[in-house]
Amino acid sequence: MLQTTVTAMEARKRFGELLNSAFYHGVSTIIERKGKAIAKVVPIVHANAKLMRDAPDARTVAEARARLKGSVIKYINPFEPVGLEDWEALK
Image (cartoon, rainbow, N blue to C red; front, side, top):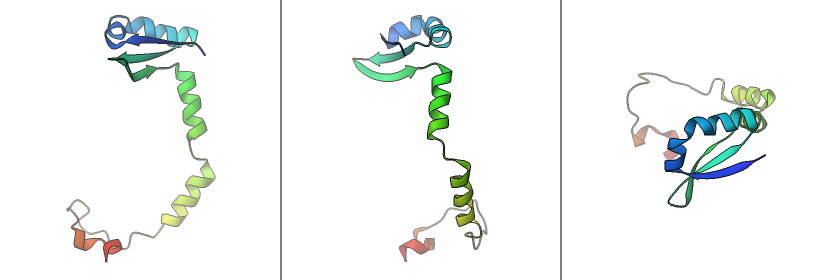
């Protein structure tokens, strides 16, 4: 995968070009401010692939839901703030 680096000011001036490079040519661009990387423009196919690779599988999600099911015992006034004395874990 090709990768370039530009300053934030240059990215501002050439943003459309950076988007086209990512989409049509697969070029990733690191955007820097004062020599430090602050953002990265990547082709969406690469971003989606990373999301899919890092996402938990359906079995993991189902197991987590099963463990949590029935764990809420009392749910009165869900929008009221909770004080420290209300946390069972702190007792």
